[in-house]
Image (cartoon, rainbow over all chains, first blue to last red; front, side, top):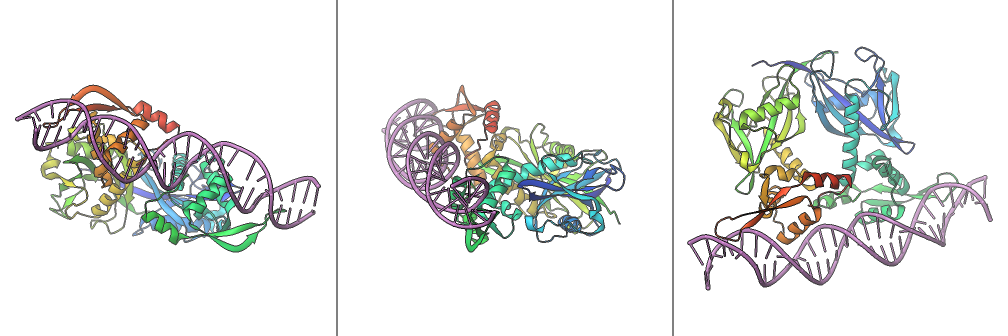
Length: 225
Length: 225
DNA sequence: GAAATAGTGTCTGTTAGACACTATCAG
DNA sequence: CTGATAGTGTCTAACAGACACTATTTC
């Protein structure tokens, strides 16, 4: 029985929140195939390198950030997805907090840009498909996990948190209902700090309480959005 | 930059329901490594073969069934997960209806057996991990999709359907609440047929109505288990 | 005091979960 | 009539969703 070898890459869909919109990091390809096209950051795995570590490496090369939320998404392996031959890619997605989204000055990031996740430019390979799948997964995860907090700084206002949910879900949420649910979930710790956005009443800062969330999970309580 | 080639396999976690318990198909390995150990059905992808088609092929080789529910699970690629070298496996899981679970007479199935999914024998490679992950995924999917129906014949009784949910969720459900929810979801079509299990009152047969389910999905209504 | 955002409470309809008895069949 | 499984209804507590005004700040 034949055992064809394959090349293996990892691609990372790196999300962040900018201007109250879900955005994704894209890099412009410098070489063929798809030269000059935009693509998801990614590359070949190295000898002896675990898949997730390869994804973390690509992520750090492009953004300079570490310790971020990273999760495997799906594997794409159509025989003709890459004109160079049989290349199988394991896709990951990552969430970058708004206060950590500076791009690395490294060589790889020469042509890297944030794009609105919902309206990217034409993408190389099957990266459009990967991106759409990642958005859908993120939307689902938002409903029963706390991934949303990964997009915010450690201290945030309730309005900022609501913006995260609205940006990902793609619809407006009622302020009072949103706050009531957060109150009910009891996973936020209010801080004795306030911030002011322009000329208006200051907003109280909160911190995510992972410990309380663990208790909720044990009881099987899920998020209600 | 080095581009190490890798061997790519697919492994399939094939679930079915037997004796009111969730069971999984395992095959006994005939060759090293892990000779004589039980393992998930799977094997190397072929030249030009898409991943999902490879999984379907393995599935059919072991069970003889086609047209079953199959979904990609996760990809495992630790450098030392296979002593033969860098072997990356794309794991799938499949659901076989109780009335289609006859094993193929083919060569591969020489040593194939159903085992309770929760208490398998020692497994080769990292297959134990793959199996546990598949069970968790199935449990989650049960709550917001109709995968449960894939484990039943096209005609089934409400009690059979409840057994599916109980087997996968691992807990007893209240008969009246279960039936009320199914009634409410309105995705079952009652048939004018009854079956008798032993010496008792006959039970009405139902059929899953995929069309009504699609309507529910459009409205964003999910399953309430 | 005008503009801007933060923050707060009630009502209603739906649903989840707990709970026990009658109906129909074979032997 | 016994044993076995099918089938049925109510009450309560929790939650989702709709909805509008006051509070605090800058300029």
